[in-house]
Structures are given as structure tokens and as C-alpha cells.
Image 1 (tube, rainbow, N blue to C red):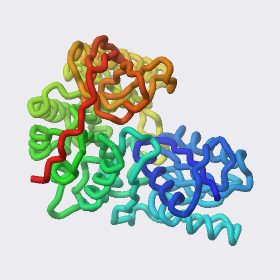
Image 2: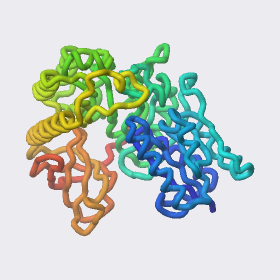
Image 3: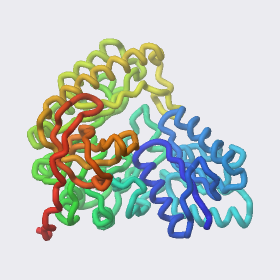
Image 4: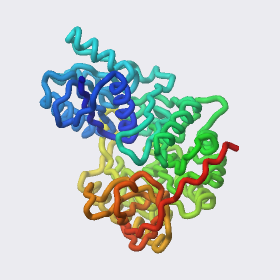
Amino acid sequence: MPSVAFHTLGCKVNHYETEAIWQLFKKSGYDRAEFEKHADVYVINTCTVTNTGDQKSRQIIRRAIRNNPDAVICVTGCYAQTSPAEVMSIPGVDIVVGTQDRNRLLGFVDQYRKEREPINGVSDIMKAKVYEELDVPEFTDRTRASLKIQEGCNNFCTFCIIPWARGLLRSREPENVICQAQQLVDAGYKEIVLTGIHTAGYGEDMENYNFAQLLRDLEEKVHGLKRLRISSIEASQITDEVIEVVNRSKILARHLHIPLQAGSDRVLERMHRKYKTAFFAEKIARLREALPDFALTSDVIVGFPGETEEEFQETYDFIQDLHFSELHVFPYSQRTGTPAANMSDQVPEEVKHDRVNRLIELSSKLSAEYAAKYKDHVLEVIPEEPLNHREPDGYFVGFTDNYLKVKFQYPSNDIVGKLVRVKLVETGYPMNEGAFVRVVENPQMTTAH
């Protein structure tokens, strides 16, 4: 049997798409090999968010070529999309496909084997108008399933290359989303994470359908779904209708990831973000009424061109006042091809570094404060794996619906992927300790309303 090996760089969407490409190879009779081992075909799914993303992608491509110089080397993903010529020029690369037409990969592999001529299968992503269906009925990782619902972004923030790598916003047909969600639940997943490039922009390209309706339909039509998580939602996408769904939902996780990027209005304007801090704060206040005490996580970029000490302090104070529960903090990185890369007043690296550290320290403090509120509470956890991947210590790790990472002891491995109740006995960041209470039995399936 021929074998295929994968390496994925970058975001959740890339991981989802690698799984989808694996499904295509599996259907054609391929075995899956470890990336470090000998395989007949290597697929490298690349990232291009930063210049270092490009660099890492090139390193991994070269590693695959060393693993088996006779293998067919396929490169896909965002770096392949934005710089196909650069990827094709790496000696040993055979096939390049961007962020569309992944279903043509197997045909390209056959064509390459016959003709032995490198194939550039990258098309103009800005012309892509229709969502490319990529089904993933199950994942190699057994506990949380991602479900990709849209592709592309129309925002063109000044620091971001993604619209050029992914194209404009395109939504997946609702019936296909619901059908795949049901497949995932039937395959045993208790939690589904909705992902996309601009996830909650879902439906902006549709006539009479939107993100709030999709959330409602998933809850009403997918039988047996216990937990639904939104990977990311922009402040501007938090409509009254979304807030109402959040308020009513019985399965939506008490955790929303809402990218802030900066807490200074002047910086937000330079970033071409389409909101001000007052708007952001007002949306959070309304969400907290609808979903009390939810975990609010966010992305922040520090050291954006021109960011003064005063502007950084505005961001720091805003985050502190709003009590975020965890931050992903990134130093601004100049991305060739974006407007921000050419802005004057680039912030020196050591200043960025210092600001990143200050924000990470604040994030750790806020995370620990958030977790402390749940000491002695009983929460529902889906155990994902034994701690440190070793069973003997008897600890398993998983997340609560409000995104607290919890370890607890349990005598056997059959707990993975189930929904269990755990009492938090010690809280902290990044890990909390819990005591196992009980497995939540599957309630009788309710029929659709």
C-alpha cells in the first residue's frame, strides 16, 4: 500500500484541512505514515502569517525531501498560495496547490508520477467565489472535533496577509455544516469547535441566513451534541441576534475568543480594525449579561508601528479593566506585502519584547484570578489525554466549558472523550487540579422541536 505523511504549520483551519486531505488519500487506499519516517508522498500544509512562517515552511519542506528524496513532495496552504514561484524553486518540490483545489491533489500525484514534471496547481484565490467542500467525518485526535464553516476574510487589516492567502469571505452551505456536525457526533465527539478564517463572518455572503441562525440550527437539528464552541468571533459580529442565541443556548461553551488586537483607539485605526474600544467594551458588557462569567480570551498585538508608551498603557489598562481571562500576546511582526510593513515609526525589538512580557504577566494574573472564582465548584470536563502522555500517574487532562484546563485522577483510560463532572480542588494558571465526581450519563436523546 502506498503511504502518505503530513506536516501542518499554523492555525486550526490548517489542521482541519490536513485532516480533510488525509480523508482523500485514505479513500484512495493510502496508509498514513509518521512525518519523520519514510513515506511515498509528503504533504506539507504551510503557513504565511509571518515572514518566519514562510521560513519554517521552507525548513519543513526540505526535511521531507531529506526523509525520502524519491517521494512525491506536495506543498499546500497559505505560503503555497501567496508565493508559489518561491515554493516551486525549492529543489525537490513536485506539486504546489494553494488554499483551493485540494481535491485535485491526488490527480496531480498520479500525473506527476507519469510525467515527472513539477506541477503548479495554484489558482487566483481572489476569484474564488464558492466555499470548497472538504469533509472530515472523524479526526486523528479523538476528543474535540473542528468543523470548518467558512473561508476567507474581507477585512484587510493593515498587518495581515490572510485575505491574499485565503481570498474573500465564502460560507459553507448550512445543510452541509449540519450534516457534518451530525456525522461528528455520531462518530462519538461530544464537543464541536466551529472554525474558519473569519468564523463568525459566516453568512455575510448569503441572502437570508446568518451566523446566529447557524448556531440555532446546530442546537436544534444535531442530535446528541453536548458542547459547541466558537473558535473566534469579532466584536463587530456580535449582533443582537447572536447575543440572544448565546443567552438561550444550552450547549454553547461559556467561552468566547474575541480578538482585540489593541486597546487604544489610535492604534486600532492604524490597524484598520473596524471598531473603537468603547464599542468593544459595550459588546462585552452585553455578552456578560447573556452569558454570566464566561471566559473571555483574546489576541493582542504589541509594538504595532507607531505604538507609543502611552498607547501601550491604554491597551494594558483596557485589558485589566475588562478582566480578560487569557491573552495570546504577539509582538508585531513586519509581514512583507502588507501596508503596516511600510509604515514609519517601526517599534524597536527590545521595546516590543518588554511590552510582550508585561502583557503576558498581566494575562497570567488575570487567568489565575478567573480560575480562583471556581474553586470548589463542580464543572463538566471532556478528558483529552493522560497527563504527559503517561498513564501510570493516573492523571487525565481536559477543558471545562469555560476553558479552564483541569487535571484529575482516574484509574482507567476509557474516560477519554467522555463528559465528566469534576470538582476543582486547587486552582491556578495554566493548570487546575480537580477531583473526579462522576461520568455524565447520556441523557435520552430528545427529538427535534
